[in-house]
Picture 1 (cartoon, rainbow, N blue to C red):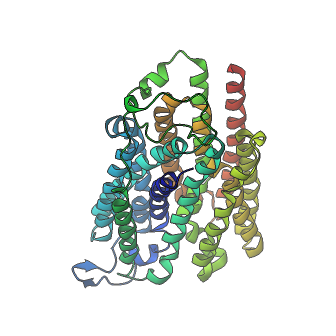
Picture 2: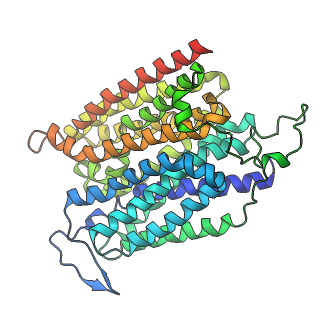
Picture 3: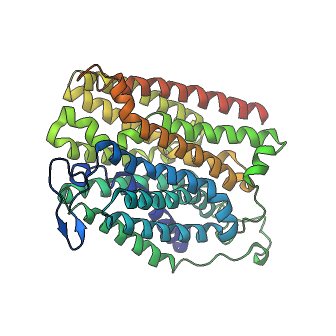
Length: 433
């Protein structure tokens, strides 16, 4: 693996880091963004807080996922026009513009527009990064490279959440967005140094005796003109490709229906009833615990397989959801802590990284961009549904002021559904081999 490939990989996953940053950037500063009973003051033309309700803030947070859905649906078209590197560069500009808009907004409408733009750019990132990592990696390092995407997301979430501790105050919450803007600008400038890929026709004939260090797909080959479109993917007569798509969709669907998005979006709120003033620090610790476990799939022998990892992970989130539900309902700190840590660890060892790695494992190269666009679109759609329905669902399942953990019994059931969908689609794919 050359130094150029390593540096290119670092630049590539920096986009994933920005995506993770924007997942959690508003999570810990909710009380500072919403005025509530406080009076808004103006400083340098910017108000200290916004006169919005908790429900309106929830819309601002989750509209990000709608933008992500639109971005992932557009990824196939954008990639065909600009290539993978060009798509990431396009996403960088959206991340910069959207962050400026959110950070400088005084009204809810502009916050929503800014979050939509950030979400759209993140949708492009979520399709392009895993595929590009697979292209620059050698075959033996493909899984470990694939986990870097999820690890970078986790690091970004930690950065976004940790900034809420010093900047979780009226007006100062805008500094969180300023940090995000700084990171995006650094990524944009670093992208100027990434070498432009040569066209496929300029490549020399592949050596049949190429050693194992040869990338699975050469980084110089960024020609996407011969790839299948989304329409061709859905109409292909090839059973194996269709069933591979089922696996990709099942993996992306399972990653979200386990309930990870509400846990990350509203973790501070969820844990505040048990951990009170320490909920921000607890949330930060939980995010940090999960990151090292994203390396687990890359360290396991190939014989363990993606199917087993995904099923084990989903079973773990089902069991830990039950523990968390009981812990929250009984206000038991120890059980709640064990439940949420077990939930994050279960997610981290399988559903988190392998939902992205499985795409390059089961789909042929020409179908990966369109397959990724479909899979990630499903991911964003379910992400939006889970995030936007979490608070209303939690309220509906409560009995007065009791039962705030009941919603996690629902997530236990959806995690069990994930186990069934993963097992079924992998079995279908194996039957078509």
